[in-house]
Image (cartoon, rainbow, N blue to C red; front, side, top):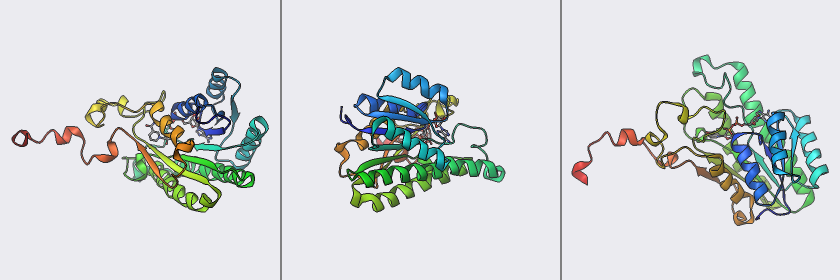
Length: 264
Ligand SMILES: NC(=O)c1ccc[n+]([C@@H]2O[C@H](COP(=O)([O-])OP(=O)(O)OC[C@H]3O[C@@H](n4cnc5c(N)ncnc54)[C@H](O)[C@@H]3O)[C@@H](O)[C@H]2O)c1
């Protein structure tokens, strides 16, 4: 119950990693606003978790929609202490395409949701937190694609690189207000409607050092830590939660193809 008395907004909180964050923050005692465009999933999750969790329809790419979201959060719970910028244009047709075929529409939509959405939500949150004078926490969902590329995900990777740069820039501008800004970097994480290594013929153990895909709970644990006072002196940082993917140069399948027997 590290977050008792706090209020959190989780964008994209109706499904996948965001839903895992909603559950974990609620378990830690926070009031939570699920901000999403998937009404059915958002309402079902809120109903499942009780009166301290509400669903608010919000399209993070629209400034007016984001302002209405924060008004709704204040009306329901009186303040916003924690913002998790998790919503993203992902697992959708058009997101995955070779650079030669990458469309104008996919580029615009990816940046509008992933990057501009993060800007709108963070600015609304930071202005409220600054006015209230009690600090606050912003957590941005990044991706391994911010620092190393996926094939055929040019726009997505560019948006995530922007998110990590923005995390550092916001952390500096907001530090004197005790508003901490950090990023969480998930690895391949199994979500209901996602496509990731689990759907490929290659077993996760062939590419992930801790030989399984991540779960939303794994990511939510890092988010809960950063949201809590246990992370009171952490800002401008990134926590990688990827089973060791970022640490490795080559996948096990490639490394084990060498004959190490004479070195054992
Ligand atoms: N699943 C993975 O393997 C993985 C890996 C690295 C990073 N991530 C990141 O984690 C985050 C969550 O990904 P996920 O896999 O859970 O995806 P998901 O598709 O399961 O969830 C994304 C949620 O965002 C919502 N959303 C989309 N557009 C929106 C908008 N305009 N306004 C508000 N909500 C909107 C969707 O309705 C959905 O509920 C994303 O930022 C993603 O880039 C995921």
